[in-house]
Amino acid sequence: MLSRDILVRETQLFVAVIAKLLGFKKAGQLLLAEKYIHDKSIEFLKVDFSALLALEEEAFEKLLNDDKYNSKELYLMSELLFEYAQMYSKGDSSAEIRNAYKKALTAFEYLENTEETYSLERASKIELIRKILK
Image (cartoon, rainbow, N blue to C red; front, top):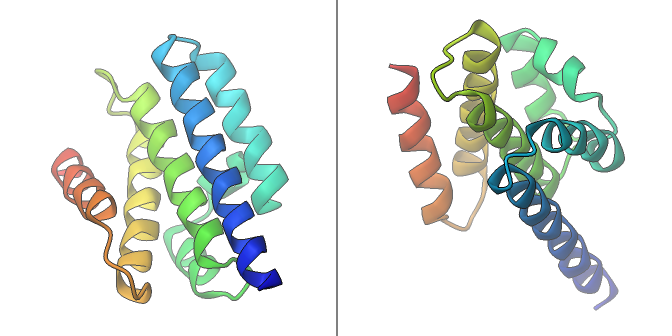
């Protein structure tokens, strides 16, 4: 029961993080949103977001396969990468934005292949990112 309560609390925290991030984006406060992404990456994932973006593709895939992160943390990581790319993608197809989309796609696909529960939201984001990267 205790582990279930911990998982529920962790899920609620991550949902609150994403909701607050979306609030910053909607208000057009991109600098605050970016700082929030960096702060939450360190707080919950124990990794600097810039370092995460700088990882080579192979190193990023190794990180996903490592037992360092549970599925909820990988979900948060994929959402942070996706939202970061979405924030700056309006008319920008820079290498950094494409890199964030590619990492988000890799993380979402990893979750799609390893999670027992199907997520329509995750599937739609995978489809959207694939279209963007074409």
